[in-house]
Amino acid sequence: MTKFDGGVSRRDLIKGTMAAGGLALLGSPTLASAANTGSAAAEAVPFADLARQLRGGVIAPGHAHYDASRKVFNDMIDRRPLAIAQCSGAADVMHVVRYAREHDLPISVRGGGHNVAGKAVRDGALLIDLGAMRGVRVDPVRRRSRAMAGARLRDLDHESLAVGVVTPSGTVSDTGIAGLTLGGGFGWLQRKHGLTIDNLVSADVVMANGEFLVASEDDNADLFWALRGGGGNFGVVTSFEYKAYDVEPAIAGMAIHTGDRLQDLLQFYRDFTATAPDSVMTMAGALPGIPDTPSAGGIAAWIAVCYTGDAAEGEKLLRPVRDFGTPFINSIGPMPFSAVQQMFDAGSPPGMRHYWRSSLVAELSDDLIDLVVAKAAELPPPGSMLLIEHMGGAIGRVGPTDTAFSGRNAQYNVSMLSAWLDASADDANIAWTRNTGNALKEYGTGGAYVNYMADEGEAAVRAAYEVNLERLIEVKRKYDPDNVFSANHNIAP
Image (cartoon, rainbow, N blue to C red; front, top):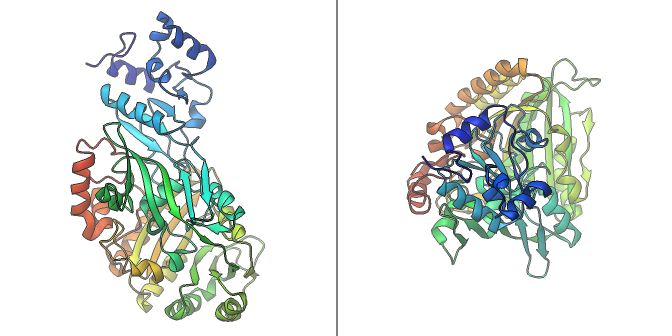
């Protein structure tokens, strides 16, 4: 049995942590001072030796901030890590990984904590928390941006847009850049400039043995391939380097119709997206009825657009969307790109419970539209959503085996994003999402977007990676043969 300083065994430490223990923040002035003196009191505190190695602190059960520090985006997730190592840079991450390996401790990794499955937090594990690592540096001359792994989309946008460039990212500004990137990276610019992974230039990575390396097309190219869609299976990415593009004028917004128009809206959406150029990104779907509107008590049908480029051309391209029906809400118009990037923020507030499913599809057939309309009628309120995202464009110009993200031939991503507040509604929301997701499989390619996957088991993970699974397993065996990084949608070696 491995022993910690002070004679505490791993079993005793985990047992004590899972109880209502009395540990504290290691690295706080009192404990850090004691640790630096090498006193017996400091040595008796679990993780004091780890805290001495870090610029960041270590939070354990009993500390006033422990419960807040273990929370993630999905309020359904209520897990108790052994301790939380708050890293300030790659060196801290290296120390934590080595410490965990030396003491046979399981680990998990949290960037922005936005993963719906809550994989970042694991009971009885040492949590590597990258949340304080939010620095962003942008070079507008070289068209490059670099973000540390704790950065949110809003951090990247704040620095990039200020100097007139943008990196393709997601659609909710609180999303962590790390999880978004490693899973693929859907967003408003995906048809014009590709997924976030298609714009990744290099990544700094701490490996399972605690060593640091750089992955790019020229260095550790097999690892770089796997990071672009393979999730957090291969190491802890501590920073990302991306391509950036000049910010262009944008026309964007959402039109919301009454639920009785959903069938017509989805048929219009199918026809519109069939000929839309890469400069136009479009989403559509259904929401629960909005209070104090004509949709109250039922459902609402919606379509959202983002065009970037010449304003006059954009007005012409988007005129069919504006002319469709009589929406009771219509916000489509010229918009700063900073506002585009936050357009969906209000629909994803903190403190909600979430359960999601995703299915990639090749076409929106009449039968699939009929199914979506039927399932939309059963949408559980208040925050659930049926979402269809248009793919194609630049996404499809990358081969299905060129990156770990294999769903390049799909034309749409159809997702069920259930969100609610009360734990008593868990069963109803999960059941609707699962039933709808299972019904959609008949129309899917077999693939799924891993960033929208709840905890669906090994078979679903294997299916999501499709033709790239065996190559991903080979990379896993090379860089993480012991499956140290298993708190994810896991690719077992």
